[in-house]
Image 1 (cartoon, rainbow, N blue to C red):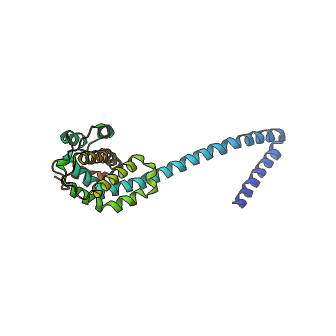
Image 2 (image 1 turned 135 degrees about the vertical axis):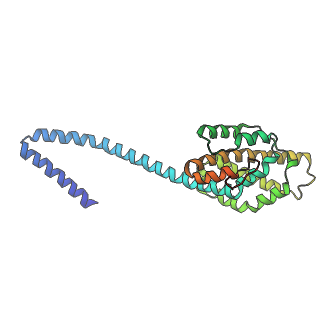
Image 3 (image 1 turned 45 degrees about the vertical axis):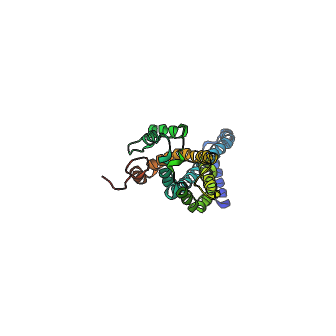
Length: 240
């Protein structure tokens, strides 16, 4: 690197020397040399800022790619199945299914509307429609998986998804902490319904957002999600 700098500096000296010899105008040569030197700090600043911005953008894209891989693993292992298990217990589930039923021809506006609905809908959970023991066993079987996800440093950049994991983890702990999930008191039922509602509302919104990412980045995976998602009556991977 030092050798290259020396060579470039010598080349510059030779060019200026040749200009003086050829045109016999040393004052103007030194005048323009000083002008060029005056602009060097500005050039350096512009180059540094540009390179820094490019590097930051590249790092951000790499981080988002890793983060979406983590989110994809979550929905493959747990998220989509949990969505299907709890949706039948949601009061007004017909409206939820209608508004969140992904279609292959959805555009950005459709996703934005669905995400807005998923975040603002007043969910109410009917525990009588849920098999709490099966739900507990399903969540407990994925506890270690969720803990590993929470250890991923990339999740610090995605607060909503981190909140979703904590909500599901809390629901898991609440269900596991009870010796029996049968003949629950009214207070227990209200508390568990609220924990389930909190987890489901965040899950629905993040699921739609993830599907939007798949449509843009991995359309072949999005096609499978459209065919198998639990917001439709007969999900099937088979292509009609």
